[in-house]
Length: 188
Image 1: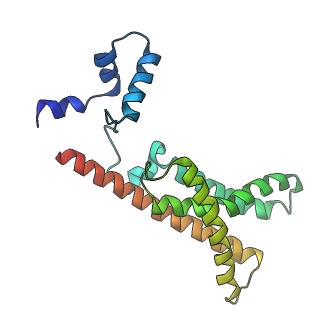
Image 2: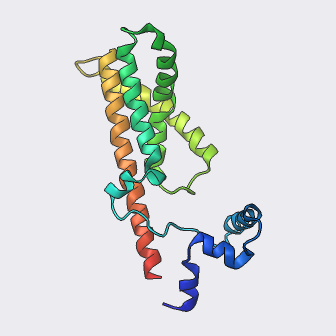
Image 3: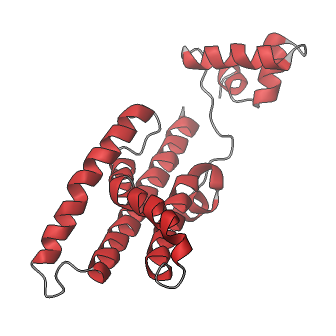
């Protein structure tokens, strides 16, 4: 490996000290961010996850996954707890709205576009809401033609299964992408 390639793979702190000096860390980090934004440097994790399990266990990569799972389980439990504890009803409305209007589309967007820079945050938000407004009625339509019909329990179960299964698919795609990027960077 050439000296130039080795110099590019250094720790962030060492890079900031070499390039900008030890004075005024904040200003130096702003300069570094501008270099990163302009594409002059590439910042990468020195120890990315090597498989799907390590991806899931590292919160810096999979925080979105755990948030979706927790919100889904919280939403399902709130549906059944509000009959016992009515004071939880406002929380049920908030979590239920997220569960219906945002999360189904969000997990599909994460599965379809696993790269962080594939879409801007605004595009992700708009697609998440739009796809949720399409997916939830489709799940209801499918349930309409089953023996269970459109009732509370089948809707909760099918929506939860959809969210969790597409989330796992998204985790798989994102972890595979990181593994492949790591392999391509190590061969260069």
